[in-house]
Length: 191
Image (tube, rainbow, N blue to C red; front, side, top):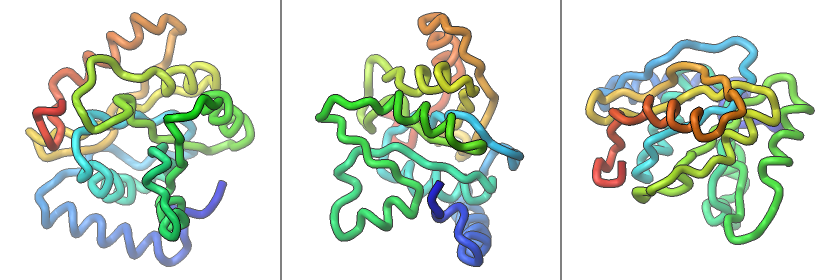
């Protein structure tokens, strides 16, 4: 996989120190521990604000994760597209029919260590139902789902537990959603 903000020699350690300091200054706590040989789908919810992204960058840097994240293609305009990709971005054009799940599963098959962050809501707005692409990626790639979260009520963000898909989408989604039921996004009205 390509070099990103999470894997650039000399720059990443410096950014990690800055991330730790900024989290302390803004009063947020990064929850979780450094993971060896990460290979999972990371979901991040609730996704309610544009500020989720910089907060996620700080937390991921502090926890020493190497993450790629999916975002709408309009976040990658010329001439800044290279910068967003260096931040770990994978542009997704939601207006076109394509094989994002299949392509991502192929990436897991080709890479020993891979973490792809997927916002399951698919938007910052309040949604009635989550998208299930993250689940199908994990199921087909035979990797667990790591539940990442923001909880503005506690001023903490981080990673919690692994969830291993059983193949029963409906039941598994109920259990995953139960974990997020008490988490408050930065914009509570969108949670």
